Length: 345
Image (cartoon, rainbow, N blue to C red; front, top):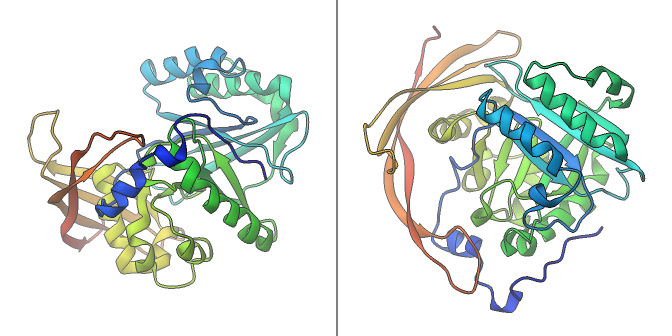
């Protein structure tokens, strides 16, 4: 299994942002970001820091990504995965597209393609054009579509060129998941190395699809619980960054609900909304927010909502980047001070 090396700052001279964050007990919840579309493409390493601006296969797509976000207001997260000796096919490129199709959801819908390398840019172009409701050639790629909706994808950031912490701490977690858990899954789990998807101060970080859960500060001893989901969910509390289908404060409230209901909660359809928040300067984080999380079982047998008050619970010192010198800053920490189950409607 090839892993990425970096010729940046020597590891012996580096102070790792994730060690500072962890030592100061920074809570990763609410840091997953919010995104309804993820476009994931195989691309061999090494990955330079600015690969999306420099790689000739990606650079022609930047205009479409910009148009999608600015003109159409669609948030899409592009991400690269390293080809795998077992999963990948020489001369072909894999592309995985996850998207949220409904407001109430428990997991992302998935389309996966394995196309000849020379067709990869055209496929991405077609997907982006379809998202913008423009004429496109997506139908021409149906022959390359894969039936992999039954496969869970665990994606670990090892992008050391963005931050050394991801290479230093992400790589061992990736190797263990790939060596021990993927082979034991009977083809229902794949494990990938990925480019940066945010939050390297929480390295090692992991994206768990199709449910869109992000994790941080991962430790080897909790991988059984994360992968097998056999045991108390409370053991995962301090590693959970949130579900990318919810906004920051909704993520914070959602974790508390999950802690109460256990693993069943992950299978419920859910959607969040902000009910009220403190009026404050845009440059400052709010001190309190009221949110509502609506939920329903897939078969409709259970439905309802939770309303929560999320409020500041102190602050810790943290840093966003690894390096020889660090700039520490205060980061507000939040807790759920009230959580009430309310009737649907």
